[in-house]
Length: 315
Length: 315
Image (cartoon, rainbow over all chains, first blue to last red):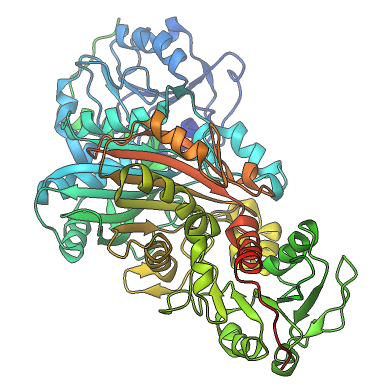
């Protein structure tokens, strides 16, 4: 598996550079870095020389796994070429997430779905990944009836340039706001959390209400979550369930700073919601560049290589 | 009314200095500034010389309205002396808020309660004030059944020293967290929002679930709010109701920065909550030092002077 030929497309970006680091740390030996023409030729921290992500280069049949960390439009343009060349594409943009037939995967939640791919697998939104990691074990224990979530999202989720802007702006300008595209009364981020969580959890009718908010923090997304359950689950029982679930770490006070550079989703502050019969409130934090994006995609790649590995023919 | 003898106790603090400014702006002509021995003798921006807030000075019978912006412990010690001297004390700490018989007042919500005082009136928590301003008109229109709220609170709510710390810390240290006292699984801030809102709204059994979070912003508290109503209210109807309510300003995107130095509570992003039958989601922002604290207390003073004015006898 570690010998698989892996390509990172968008390797110089905020998530792409974390992906490069994670692949090295997890023992991948055969990793190439791709980016736009502007970055081609530059040398990364680990010595990799960046290649230009042209359709021909991606379709040349020399890639087994192509990890895309580019914008939605660029993904739509480039992913098909990698697939045409025989690669399995794992896409971090929203281009393919909700497309029927394309698996949207959080390995801990619906990892079996990797077997269903026809060349493309999609990586969920940075809020959906930790949220579904927390919701899945609660659903298995007591049945989800409704979910409400408000987010505290780091600016690095908006890209390296936005993080640099936060570094430079006076603290007096720090604000809390909604820097997404609007779709009527909701942001597209709020729609994504609902639709993607429903798909990942395979609960297409689960009511989910999200308010997504950007806060002046560099790394780490946090979420305040209310769940209504079919059956009673005490806060203590919920803590036991969450403490035993994969990729979760139960802590007293999950915060973005504590989540930075950790692989797990931090979860805690579990208590009763007095406003619902079987309601719980909790708080989670997750490194939005790591498990919220790059690590999840690498884990999908590992799952693909373990469960669906087959020799790929060169084009 | 403008001739009333007003004392601001804690006049050099974050909220006290805003209180001094607001009193000037609203035409109060007879304002004295009090603070601890450490600040006594210093001269404020407006020329007022700070007097020491000793029990004797406060009980001397020369104050009609005493606005306290000191800590809970200091309020417990000093407020009774001002009352003994014949003043009406308006206290911004949590010392008296939940005490039976002491009115806890948001003038727009339960202003009639000022008439019930026996010397002390309490000013609610900085999150409770804007929340109840928004909840009251919704309750009158369709009946409140349950409320969930997650907050985005500015560091100035924690005092001037905490604001100065934010100014100085590197942006890499900016975090989102819970810097309150814990009462079991909840912070005291979360308990306060529930208990104070129930008292102000005069709905002692209303289920309210709060998650209170500090964010790295200097001024302006924001709140993501879910309400369940007895009767249906469309988002459009709710906007009409909120737009006509006192002290609210309907905007597309309420943010802390937009709320800073404004008197009104900004409210918007009203939409359906798919997780409840008659559920709405909305977002609000409010200057935590202004309407969230100092202005509300001054408005209580104005209400006391208008509705319950009587000549006070010197001690």
